[in-house]
Length: 212
Image (cartoon, rainbow, N blue to C red; front, side, top):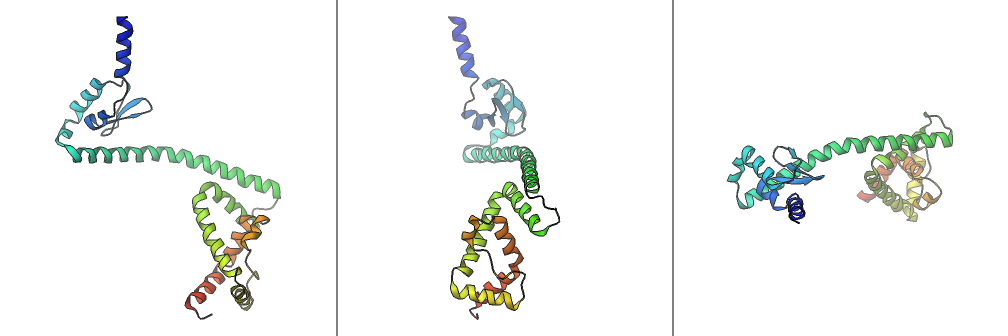
């Protein structure tokens, strides 16, 4: 019985205690106690080990009391989290780049089009952006759709915009309406908008100045 009780107490002592963060500047990461100050990891999670490390290497931190100590702990914790994120991100970036390359390769295989074809290149870029920067692409989509709706959902605006495109001898006679995305890919809509971006800018500026 004595041996069982001893093992139970020993196991309880090796559970990380939250108060050790404030007392000794340690946090638990993947089952190990990691020092917020120097980054050293202790394999055995015992209070005595943490206290020994703290008292021999970082005793000067005893000067910090109350809120100053809490602020120091929080600052060191944020710094450690930033370092960890820096190590994790490259791996994530590599995985996304690999995924994007597969997506583009699949498009090329399906459509059997050359890399030099303008519209197809734009479609590939949009497909890659959906993998590499989905949040940014969504923000771009919101702006584009909102602008297209402003121009095409109002009869006067749509007519004036078409007249402007005709006067400027633009490559296209109109934008792709947002509901047409059901049968046209987002890449086609973005590609058309990008091609007419200067005309759209000119039209929106005229509308803002209320001279058109």
